[in-house]
Length: 161
Image 1 (spheres, rainbow, N blue to C red):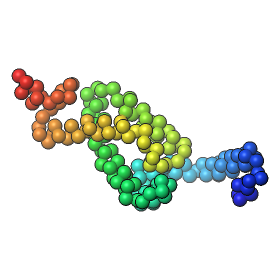
Image 2 (image 1 turned 60 degrees about the vertical axis):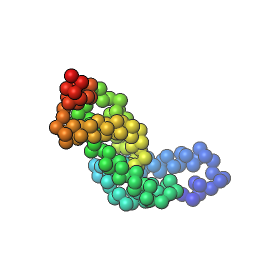
Image 3 (image 1 turned 90 degrees about the vertical axis):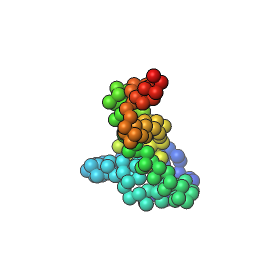
Image 4 (image 1 turned 30 degrees about the vertical axis):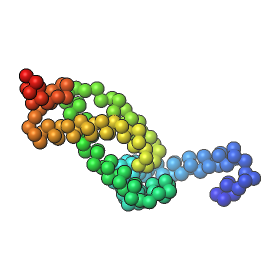
C-alpha cells in the first residue's frame, strides 16, 4: 500500500489500484452485510459502541469528547420527541414528506456507505420541528388539553369565546 502513496505513482494508477482493492474487499465481505448494515445505523445514532463512536468523531473533528457527547445526548433526547411529533402529524394527516425525505436519503447513504453520526445532519431540522410537535403533544396530554387542526388548544379556543 505504501508504494501506491508514493509521489512518483500517477494518480490514475493509484485510483485504479485502490478501486480494485475496494471492489475485491466488498465482494469478499458481502456475506457480512446483515451484520454490518445494522451496525452502520447504530453508528449513525451513536448507539453502537457509543464511547468508541464519540472518540472517533472527536478525533476526526480535532476536539475533545465533551462537545461530541453533548451533541449525541441531545440527539438521543430529541429523537423520541420527534417520533411522537411524527405520530401526531400522521394522525392529523399532516404533510410530513419534507421532514422524512432527508431521513430516507440518509438511510440509503448509510446502508450503502458507512455509519457516521454527522450523516444525520440533513435530518436535524426536521427532527427539531417534529420534536417541537412532540413536546406540544406531551404538554397537551400533561394538562389534559386537546389540540385541533390549527395547533391551538381547545382550552385556548374556549377562552376566546
